[in-house]
Image 1 (cartoon, rainbow, N blue to C red):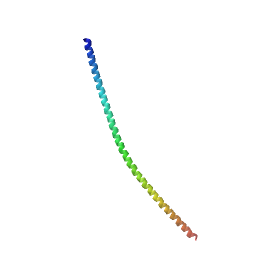
Image 2: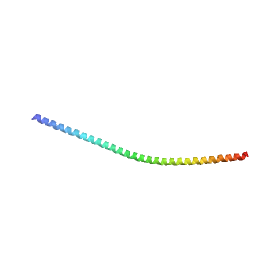
Image 3: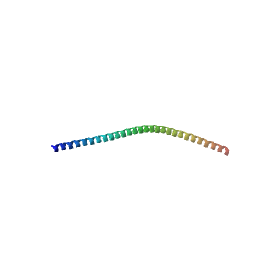
Image 4: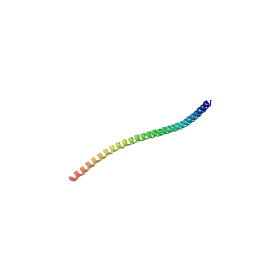
Length: 102
């Protein structure tokens, strides 16, 4: 019987060690799960911030594209006016030369 009681005591001690080890694994796993969950939350916040920044940048890009189109149209109009003024000046100079040559 002493062998049986010794075996039973060793079995109970082994079960207690196993339960303690499982408790440590659960605690460690729980901490790791909490850390991973916190990381996921931070990443979601980062993504949300980046999405907001991306939306703002797209809005700014659209605004700049409109400004660029307006500036190009104004440049084209100014070039046309400059060409017209240049042509009229050339004609005026030619008229003055013609008058001087007479």
